[in-house]
Length: 500
Image 1 (tube, rainbow, N blue to C red):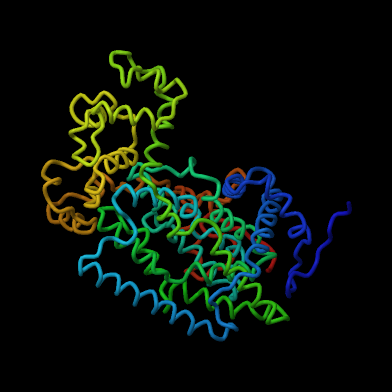
Image 2: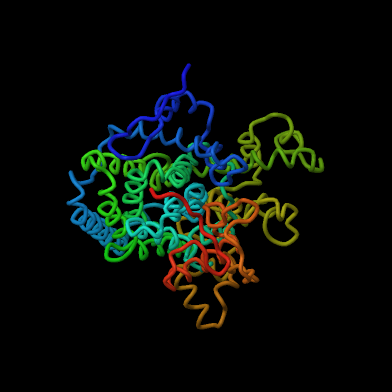
């Protein structure tokens, strides 16, 4: 069978491989989203292979969204009005939400602290590649038509400031709450992150789609505002989310730059209508994968408890003594006998070791996990302990109490993250010393480093958050602000390439 040749894609001067559309369905069953995600986040020797995987993934994704509706105006001329109207709808709905909360309505998103932490875990694969769809624009930052997009990418990197780098902030948020990068999550949780990484690889061929995706991602959504509010209420640092509210503003922020990029790059394409169709297609790619509200609705505390105990049972089988029997069987027999974990938990409840709907301290099983001489101390992570704690408490967990709250804290109204931070300032307790707040990395290397080490671009999505990447970003931003748009400054060599 002959190899498909290049064909015109929609409208532009770009050449788009016919193979993208013709082979994507056949590849899909073999290339899982998780695999594509990791191959693009940490490309090995063959970067061309990674690019081909990106093209195949996006070819299939484009086919899926091509006929879907969207809320964009009929032409780019209406984008400014569309952006302002969208922002007004979001802020008006948020004010209505706040009014309902003041009147006594419960939280809309998170039933308890474990629910909120589970959400942070579920969206980790996407949040940990924040901004990656614009990585390919960096090499074209000297082009005035692309400079706004490249600046957005650098700002996603915090301009090299570790306290503003979006990915590093999220990594710290995960670490502070006993969460991981989500290796255990189902494959579909990696779809949106894989799409974002893929767009960052194929900018040369799919610039209109990149511009369209960026247009959608940088607008202010209602769920961002509510998420930040409820995380704060539950004592969880909301800064990653509030930072996006400010940096994506419609006046001079990423939302405005996204609209400007649509107009600035239109002249590259002879067919204005075709260009706009491609931008709209890229915009619709935002709808693929597990979204915020879907991730929130997916939480089931009983299912999560079973997942946690199932994972632990494999490690704990054979490690227990046989002093006591639960339901006529030893713990080792329960864990290693092939019985469902749910049956073991049921036996513990029947024996009175687990008492649900009450203070966990009254459950003998919880006493094994927490407290003086807790024999199982260290077996479960902070996140897992919070899930078990809230599962045991049932409806009482709506107060957001931490599993390790002191006796005094258990008898008082829970403080929000921000109110606790203000109290710490008054009592001279640095926020970074509190449990649940990750102290920024110390001892960063400050000497000049090239932006490429051992063939790895440290400004790429998989490396920009490292000490080397932060320093390289700082140096590049410093050079740009000093009037240099070339390829080198202070030992930093940003990726270069042909014009888009």
